[in-house]
Image 1 (cartoon, rainbow, N blue to C red):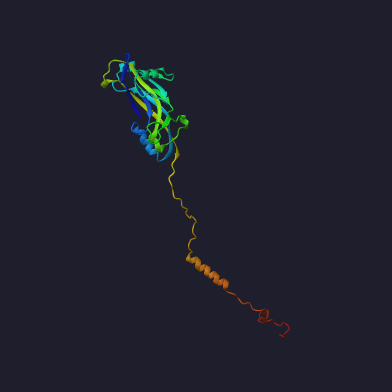
Image 2: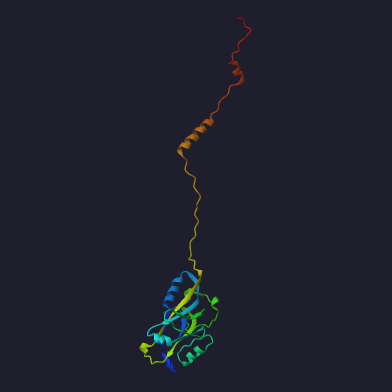
Length: 244
């Protein structure tokens, strides 16, 4: 995600511009909204676990302006300023957790690294319901992603006032890196059925049928054995005492 922060006010010889880093998956963050729109068909819950913000010189930024410019930032996950002004800048610079950095000629400068807190909107409401939970416990339904506002940090660009015209005001480019986590896969309804996988008995082979029929016929035959007297009468015994 990308944002821009420009100089739009001045006071006491200092030109500055204030901005809040809030992440809401809607028209202000179309890429994130499209990602969640796709993932809501796969997962039930999500959260933004970590946010890192990088700053680089943007439009109308010369090297001389870069040397004189400072970027202030502080993590604020509750009440962020809604209007610019000297009091808002003073609150930012006077906070204990504020950091002030300068831009480099090459590369990105990380100005914020935090775990955001989501303040969910009630259905049909324009303000959050005030829930404050640690990031590790903040899991929300992906289906209602457009009702979530992840906060946040406040940042400012500060440079000497040189009477910049609105068309040539220095602008800082902010690159916001999000670490998303999902859990709870959606399981679609399915129709289960069982299938019989028993191997069927093969059909009989004709040759084997013929052999089996022959064996059955042979086993059905019976032989009538002759009696012992009959066998003896058929045997002729030679009389050895008869005269030659």
